[in-house]
Image 1 (spheres, rainbow, N blue to C red):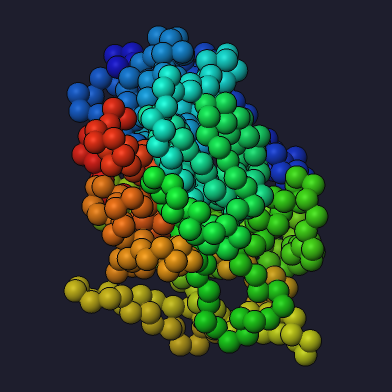
Image 2 (cartoon, rainbow, N blue to C red; image 1 turned 60 degrees about the vertical axis):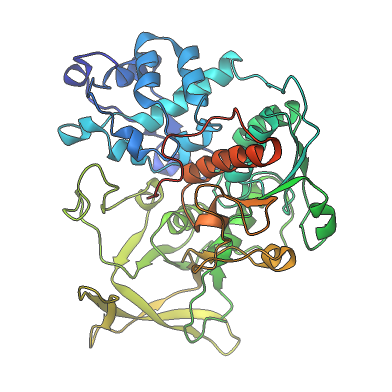
Length: 486
């Protein structure tokens, strides 16, 4: 695969970025693409490793060495066909996936791994540019109707696969535009929304029907949903985790998703009442994951006075931890482009109190340093460090603490059983709930996870729905079925 000696001849080269002072004045993507010659060399770095562990790292089962080889050969259209054979939306994963495939790359044992994610992005962008991505409506229709609830990556993947099988697919979205968290949870500077709209236009041309501003069980009667032959619930894990800390009701303590959603709507000219702004404020982002990073980047674009990030867990090592050896997903420090735009990061710190003034406005946070006591066979215990209390000036605290699971509106109205983690319970490998014609996929089934896992689950669930409706299915499936995630 690739060039036999390519990994010896060519070093890994990643995309560069527009300078910080230039990019923080707008909400546009800021990557600087490599030349075609450099991208071709990156594909050539894929070594003939014998057993491509990148396959085990990729939840979609992408045929990574195959499309790398096509890029090396200059066969870009073939590379696009191979990539799309397992991944409905490489333009999303090529921008947003943390690339577990790269962490499992065999070359990564001795050199920098192959830049698989960037190759995906360049393949799909070339395919759109050349007009190779065209609507592919099914030749025949089965007459079976399928409702997809939720238009995130899981719902969209399930919809496209089921439409390809010839079923009549309707996607319901409660927001005013399609995309789920891709639309309003991911800042525009990481995913410009025209990228979503471009793909939705293809799906519509293939015959998929989209219904926005349609909240099933709220302004859309649940009995109308039951009229469909099959239902796939892909509503995501949207129950936000709060912080049971004194003063959390202060004016200035805001959920990250509210903050990010508002800004995306403003970017596209929508009127937002009482928008939360970080302009001129001391901002503290509580939570060190991707959502926290997105809040940092957005706060910098607002013109925050200062941006500080709190994380209750220890600072990860710069290199791969011994506890997560290759080819596993590594415990390793991640510094995002948003962090590099300006942010003070703090680990092993816990918020003890949100301090507010007489009018209820947030003015400061009180914290304490912590340690984790680890005892084999027991849950980790959080220990406060005596004498480490500190008060931080703060006008805006953004809670980026993740999600506790899916909302229960649909499960209660449809009678869907929940699992021990309060996710929608589905039979292992079949994505089928306790109600035979109702299936579930993505974060709603597995809990908060990656975009690449959502697409994978949507594809696999679609195949199971097709089997339920027709007795068999020609839709593809990845080998190994419902594999454990990262």
